[in-house]
Each structure stands twice: as structure tokens, then as C-alpha cells.
Image (cartoon, rainbow, N blue to C red; front, side):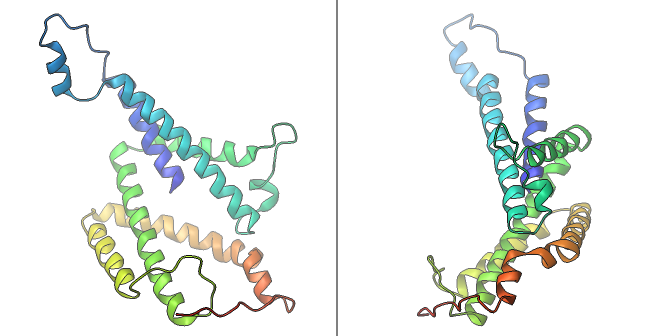
Length: 213
């Protein structure tokens, strides 16, 4: 999702550069009020988009690096650190290539819908996971406990699902294809190499301490 977010921001930044010329200097005392009615300064919008784009880029690289470190992706590839700059350069190049491809080939409206339905699906999965773990594993240590379970997770699933239903069928189809691809990567590689699964199978793994419900 971070890669899709980057594609949206890159597309918006490119459209801002192409479609919004710099406003002329005011010619009368009322020009400032007119400019205020026209919206924000295009230069300010470009700076904000560029800063957000850089933030999303770093987050995308960090997520790939963290997943590779946990064994969900090939560690020798995505967690490879540059010997001089000490950065995960392979992950950076991968994210940059995907962003460039998405932003240049896919319309901005389609990218926005993909980001929306992907984010909402993530909310549904997180809400369902919180509810399920609270019932099946009440002994897990929880630094933060979601209040009013299962009411809060159920409301989150309902609201997110309702917003997902407002998106067109084509967006659902693209999400299903994207989801199948992610599940194939997980069951084909990540599940076998996951550090969490290895710890769970290890006899030396200490049991978790129970906590109060």
C-alpha cells in the first residue's frame, strides 16, 4: 500500500507541475482576496506533495526491510544493506521502480481507488484480528488493549466494509488480483521462512505470560 500511495502522490505532483502555472502578481488591491478564493498556492502544494512523497517512500522501504528481516521476504535481497551508505539500497531501488511505473502508466483515479480499498481492507483485517486474538489468545501480553472488544472491532469492520462497497467493481477486481498475489508470496515463501513461525516451533521458546482480560 505504501507503494500505491507513493504512486498517487507522484502522479499528483506531476499533474500539479504540468497543470497549474504560477499566478501572476496582483494588479489591484483586491487581487489577494481573489487568490485566496482560488485555493492554495500551487508552489506550496508542490512542496507539501514532495515532502509527503519522500515520507511515503521511506515508509515503503522500511516496510520491505522489516518484512525481509522477519523472513516474510528474501532477506539477502530486500534486507541487503549498502556497505558504504548503510541503507537498504535494494529495497529503495525496488520501491522507486514500482512507484515510477505506477505513476507513469496508471491513471491517478485508479491509483486513488486502489489505495482506498487496500487501506480499508487492511482496517477490516486488523479489526477482525484484534477480535479473534482477544478470544483465542487472551494470555498474550498487550502493551495496549483495545477498549470495548468486540464492539469497537465490529464497528470498524462495518464502517470500513460500507466504504468499500461504495467503490466500483473494477476496483474490487484489482484488489482481488493484488490480494491473490500477496497471498501467493506469503504461502509460497513467507510462511516457511517466518521468524515468528520458527520461534513457535522451537522447544526453547519461552511461553508467554498471561495477562488479565
